[in-house]
Length: 283
Image 1 (cartoon, rainbow, N blue to C red):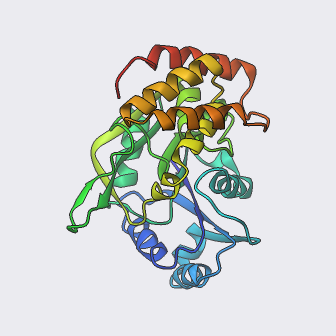
Image 2: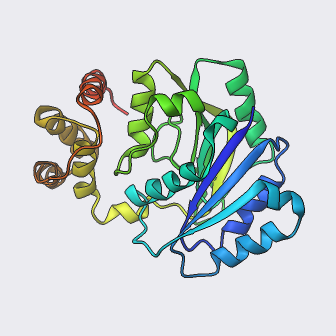
């Protein structure tokens, strides 16, 4: 079972070598890695080039490509960079496709454990471990942005057939929830390995906090919700955060979205049904 790892990156000079060294130490080495430098203005590219040039085995396993300067963001831009990596690869040579962030440290058994899941459970289309971040006391704790059953954006992996079934990744805010829902639409199971932890060196969630309500309205639009579902979803989110102001901000953002949605009518229909089933669950 061969893995294709694609790492989009932008100004990651502080973290990228730790990520690459953790891949170098993997007990499972049947992988290729494509790094997409998305307009970095720091020394990220030089650091990667020096790493690759150290040994001939790295030159065979790792590839670096540079994109022009871009306005990088954790939403659409990161997926556009990832998709450039997909274009550079011949997918027929791979069984599993991974989208990893450049600021992750993987335990040595990470790819081996993923391979076991995909080999032993043919119904699994997506899998990952769990993400830890360092708190102010220096302790590594669970990054509780979502449940422990969610395959987080920085450490996504897909069985190739599942990746093809869902049509790849959509370059919109919310892509890392859309893929899960579309995987379920196509009959795939999603698995998280609860005792397999990665370290996230630079969490990106803080980038959304300032415009959280606006982004949530955009997210509801991107996943294909209609107005009744968006209203209920906004109400649930606002109650959880004890803010009526947030409710109106989310709806205002949702109503004023203009861009064409990245989902087909069939996909939106499925997601709406899925959301109706989920809407009254407290998570």
